[in-house]
Figure 1 (cartoon, rainbow, N blue to C red):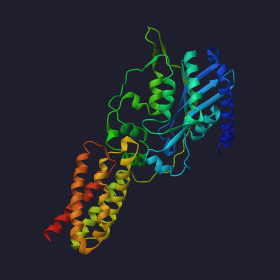
Figure 2 (figure 1 turned 90 degrees about the vertical axis):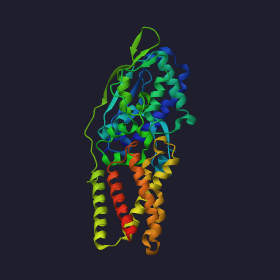
Figure 3 (figure 1 turned 120 degrees about the vertical axis):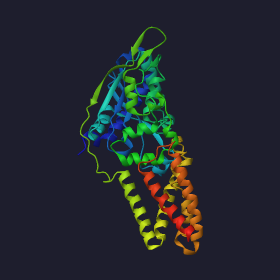
Length: 399
């Protein structure tokens, strides 16, 4: 059963909005002295079992002790109920929204998941606090709340970072990096290490750009990376005076026990090896019987072509990291044109002409593997189909 605070969450959010609007009306009278009662913190939430949350989450805590205000500023508000949500997400047309909610309700939600919430109170001057408060106020105006979400480039974490860093009167100096030469794909792999099929799905959609080396600022799209960078960062304004960015830190919600849903029993590699064995076994049976199972070819042309259609439409996505994907050389929409020819005996000559072109594309697919990391196990599937069709082409040529 969910905590009562979660059941009352919609009401609490409405109250929070009302309180925030009252605070906004009073901001014209705020001055630097009022900032002594204000605390601004970065909140980093641990991942949980939902697919969209396995990378964690970031928010800002705004606390005004004098006015009794304690809110979470959240840049990750969205709704699955919006029309064509999945399709819009694939094409990079998803709009997220800045929202506010009571801090206690925000924490209760993550406590119910078993996810910890780590708070880093920021060591800000009154001028910096006031600038951030005014920026939050402006950002919460109806015309400014909604933004075009992009997972790597403009997400809940980068929005929170910019809200803080862009309103400091000092330069942020991060500690020297211990890990260098990281790509977007490597970070995604680290986060999805315990969920192989989510990792597989990401690798199917991510193209060659996801394997390029990214800098520190780009790596801060991940909540844990930003939290770690903030923890050791120093602020300087050109003088010898320096101060820590984080005044104090600790868990406001301690990590709990998370429930995980049952996963598919086979790993991607195991499933691809099973499919490869079926393909090679079927080819061996055909060789012994001196025949070709036309329905078997039609099935693989259909499956690979449908996956290829998805990769093709991703070319037009607003996510730059999915546009150039060498896996489309194997999963090629072109194969859909030869399903009918595969089934008709009198079209066999045309079928084998199409298969020749597909074999060339599969060879290019393997060459592309030197530049792009492919989804787990896909090479075994591609190799088995290449062997099958090279054999069928050889037999057809001899006949």
